[in-house]
Image (tube, rainbow, N blue to C red; front, top):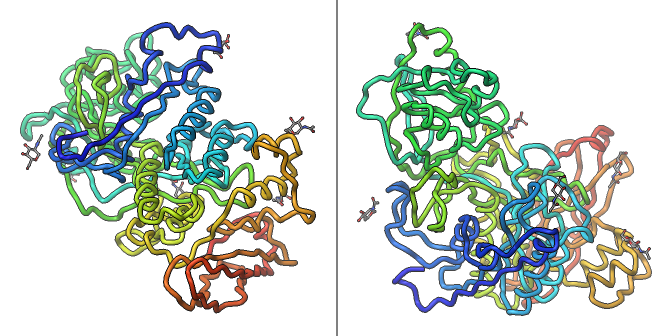
Length: 572
Ligand SMILES: *[C@@H]1O[C@H](CO)[C@@H](O)[C@H](O)[C@H]1NC(C)=O
Ligand SMILES: *[C@@H]1O[C@H](CO)[C@@H](O)[C@H](O)[C@H]1NC(C)=O
Ligand SMILES: *[C@@H]1O[C@H](CO)[C@@H](O)[C@H](O)[C@H]1NC(C)=O
Ligand SMILES: *[C@@H]1O[C@H](CO)[C@@H](O)[C@H](O)[C@H]1NC(C)=O
Ligand SMILES: *[C@@H]1O[C@H](CO)[C@@H](O)[C@H](O)[C@H]1NC(C)=O
Ligand SMILES: *[C@@H]1O[C@H](CO)[C@@H](O)[C@H](O)[C@H]1NC(C)=O
């Protein structure tokens, strides 16, 4: 991890017996090594714990010093993913074996960029939730990705209250590459290594007008492999619609058909979410609304033409952050009383280390090899938070995983760098089902004042509240667990966020306990009322003396609006 680092210990193990037990052959050498032949693990691990490396860039884009969140941490990789079979590449038995090994090895933080994306599982049916329970009860923080199935409601995964679930948002860095036609200039994004020459115009074509003989227009529209007729696209800028196939794979389709360049236009679902990819040809990725303008031009012009400008790196862009359209969203499909995701962090066009076994497009055709590449996903936002958890552990070794999570959630920010509510990828306000408590604010999380702490017994009592039976409880606990006489309420789990489900005219009451981790201080409750709900906190003033002192307060929710039982309103 670079010459500037102090001695860094790097461990690596692999777990493939679960994969093998599915009747799959694991004899080939690529199954019997922790080596990353795919890139995802290298990228995420270096984001969490990579040492500082100056001059890191993707073909010169984003050039600067790259560093993981915990640059001085020792790191260990636990490989559990292999060639996909029927859509799964990481088997639960292997994930659990890796959790066991990591716990045994004494790691402090587990960064888990994995999940049953978009498919809710109950906690006892989900290896990550079981493995992470055992880690958290031993004081090991577990940070997980929220999934890439957004922006659909309830698409969120990794729902257990003991894991730290991270959504993905943008950062204030862009890689603009403009497409210019008929006096119109549209801003896209790209990390194409090659560019068209000068400001010479090229003929442009809608890929739907260029279907190869025998191929459906719908396939050509989204530039599926082999769907384009070389006679129609040769030497042209081809406009492809986003969807179904990988963004960079569409570029390959255009390149193989002899196209000069590609403009990739978002569909309605992906809105304004544009991603800078290391395309194989000159290319740029544009917003949905801009795509409509371009498609209109292509339709109305007799011989449409235009050009693409070379991409640049621009910093301090606004608005930032905004939510990625792909970031999975709440409400929590298993327990709506627990808000998920918990937080959001940078997950769009993240530059981190990469494997030499794979091209930056991950396409076999692409023979380029890079030390760093840009990737997007909640897999990329998760290790940002893991790295910060590592720093907080170093600063506050006595804080529990729940205290660390609370510190980061209660200091997160829900406004962007224009001072407005964090937006979604269509630039409409996003809300807590997209970003949880907000965007992580590292320096503030060092000193949150108070934390909502939780220990293993609180989580077990939460499982009692869910009416888990003795068998399942003892599997979580490792030995029989006796539930309290009076079953606790799910919403009273001492979580750093509060969700009241189905609020009716009879109102609701929720309890929370805060622990002082700062200087002696007096706190006063201030409420940003959710629309249509009256919230009171009692007591509304609490004074704390020494560190570790705990106090309990109650929050009362009242409404006259019966419709709220169906919709959510948000406050703070
Ligand atoms: C990155 O920046 C450094 C320092 O300015 C420079 O020496 C280096 O050539 C740059 N790398 C690339 C690939 O542009
Ligand atoms: C994959 O799916 C096929 C067809 O449904 C099935 O026969 C096979 O057993 C599955 N393999 C695994 C490892 O699940
Ligand atoms: C090109 O731009 C001109 C000036 O704005 C406009 O009048 C014309 O309709 C445009 N052509 C097409 C084909 O959109
Ligand atoms: C953004 O929010 C608006 C308003 O709720 C919604 O119509 C739109 O679909 C959302 N876009 C995305 C990409 O989530
Ligand atoms: C306990 O709950 C699990 C999960 O619902 C179920 O599979 C199991 O049969 C139950 N055991 C008993 C003894 O009820
Ligand atoms: C909320 O109300 C819906 C519809 O009546 C019901 O299906 C659901 O179980 C309720 N949820 C909770 C947590 O009470």
